[in-house]
Structures are given as structure tokens and as C-alpha cells.
Image (cartoon, rainbow, N blue to C red; front, side, top):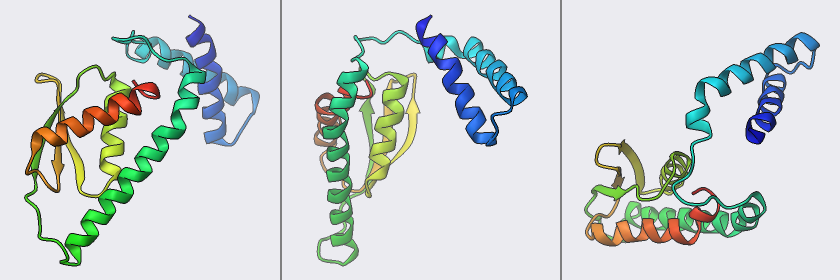
Length: 164
């Protein structure tokens, strides 16, 4: 209930900023739209997590190592693609790897997909809810088990503490 009470004014603020208007009618309409959206999507938005969710302060503290790890991953992917593009390294075998969703929440799945796609050499193809896997096309698929282990290690070490 407290999350809903906080969410409606925040969504109304986003609405007002999008319109670039803080007129009374715009705020009232934004509040109604925000409340309606929360009522219609409350199960998805306020879904109970499979595991305990870290607090806001813990997430803020954990965000810095998470951001640094994402930047390092992007730099490493850029370096590997550059070496292949400049023909300094042979073209690896590209392919599709199924990565288990595991304990990731819907937000966690979205964040994993986004940060993986940020790094050159990998892109999300599909999230298969039936098989509970994310399908990624990766630049070098010679060892799929190693790739899955990398994704899981990254999630356990950095992402879980910020975006479970």
C-alpha cells in the first residue's frame, strides 16, 4: 500500500514533466492516469519477489560496483570486436546461447538483457518463458557453458544486489 501511495505522485510528476505543465488540470489528469495504471498493473508492478529484495540504501551502495562492471564489460566487448574487425584475431564462431532465467525478476530479466546488449558482441534475441531461458546471440560461442557461467556470475556478484 505504501508503494502505491508513493508511486502515484511520482508517476504524476513524470506525466507533468513530460507535458512540461504543472497546471491544476494536468496534475489531476496525470493523477487519475497514474492511479488507473497502478490499479490495472498492480500484480505486475508490485509482484512479490522470489527472494528478499534489497533495500533502497543497499541498492544505491551496490550500484557503483554494478555500473563499473557494466562499463568494464562494454570495454572488453568493444576490444574483442575491434580486434576481429581489424583482422588481428580470427573471426570466432558466433551462435545462440540459452541462458537460464533462474531467480531473476521481470525487472532483472530486462536489466540482464539491456546490459548484455550494451556490450558489443552479444544481443538478446528472445525471452522464452516456457523454457525459462533468455536466448542471446553471442560473438564467440565456442564454450556455451562458460558463457552461461559468466552471465550467472555477473548476476550473482553485481546485478542481484541492485536489480534482482
